[in-house]
Image (cartoon, rainbow, N blue to C red; front, side, top):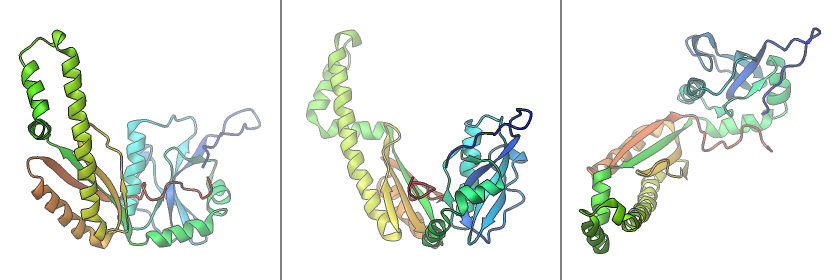
Length: 264
């Protein structure tokens, strides 16, 4: 979806408003009057319907810059709340069309059948994310204690000035990072294997931080959320004191709908 540009008016004035699109939902969806998106409390969410599908939208001033943290939070918060109730195909952040008719003509009508089929596939499902993070002191002790050479190096440079042991400290840091990467690969695979039986799809994400142990997105039936929670509790028990584990969701299926429009 392209971001709309405002056509010039008869006096050279820009169009005042456009339609911000959050995502695609079934046509029978009714919006919550308390739901708000990009723009805060003034951003009332409505729907533009066409056939068996609809777009979740708000009216947006075209001279309003997009991209603040609050804008992104409003976009995601609305989609995630929707995903907890009905299937939703999330739009890319910042998608704006000229008006409601353009939403039908440029988005809903050309891709109606594809959207409808994708929504049927998502019926009753949402995305969940398992985030696991190493306890820093615990993982460092684990790495050092598992490799006598690293322990000897650590002891050798521990009480020496940093300026005279710079190369050794760099080597030690690189070795520790390599060892943590190896553990991350194994721990991420364990999370994916443990949770896969309760899901319809699994995506192992890249680590977002140095202490990330696992970042696994899954597509699952919302009715199976208690199973996902049990898997996370079991992992947290097994990794107590070493890794902190939590389950996020239900969320919009960002990792399972890579593009809003087919063929882009």
